[in-house]
Picture: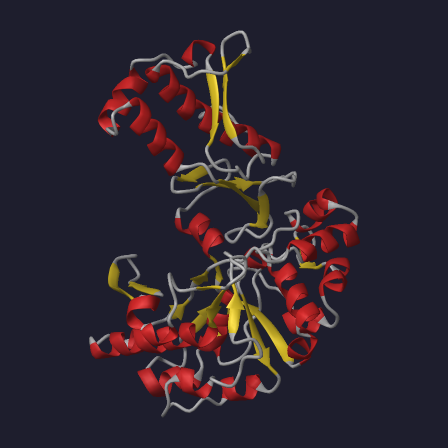
Length: 419
């Protein structure tokens, strides 16, 4: 859990973090999560998140941070994860005693104590059922922005309903991680925002309303448990009296809707129409601002958190930095300097030599293996010369990113012309 405070000039005046494993060892998580015995189910304890919030605010208080100067508060949470509030919890949330840490007041408030999160891949049967119920994977993508994914919230809710109908019956509200965090500050249930709500397989991204056919396919009575979604920049209301009494926040401090981590990245990088951002990591992620998207079976279309009349696209490529590092080790003696020199020694276009490198099963597209082609479009079984291999890897990765971006509706233009 991280906190950052900025002033009106956007200067950082405070930042800190709580590390779940190290600072909250009593929850016995690894990487902030529990990986269950089936190796597919991955959850996080809800009370750990609440206790982490208590802890980080106490650290700020001890440092002398002046909470009375905070004019507005917002945040981001990991996408897809869900929190299940037990019947009657809203009264406890509204009337939390400022004499107690919040996690003590809320310890009996959750019908599901361990929240399913984005790493979970245990809902394959629910995904198949959802796609079948709405007329196929492409139709689901056309409505909600994505085909059915195991980590997406609707499928997680469907699993909980099918396996534990009594727990579902006891649940009065379902929050995303982002709207859950906003609820803690608001002192009542915060609505889900359009952008984070787009990662649930439940929201009609064009109408900005829940899809009845998707809701019905997942669980009964789901709409009232989700509440009405709102634009991502909505001011939800003033901060809960708990925080004014316990920490000295001004009662006028406004809570702005929280959103998901990926939409927040688009907003934080200040992307505009036509911009692309690429996060190079173990997996590579492509962020796009799109005016007229065309949802496909690969990638995701989400409502744009900055401008709710437009959209953002998200593409994930599993063979990212580890793939590049493997080719660096094989072809450049493990040196990025040697890798860069080899890349510079070859011409753009690589004399027609092209490669697609998937050491592990790729997400976009679903493929595995090393695939090399020469200038005559003939498949090459053996390796390329080292410098050709390096350029084939880099050009192949970026060509794939462009091709899949264009499939989702992104238009590539020259720098000085409008699309």
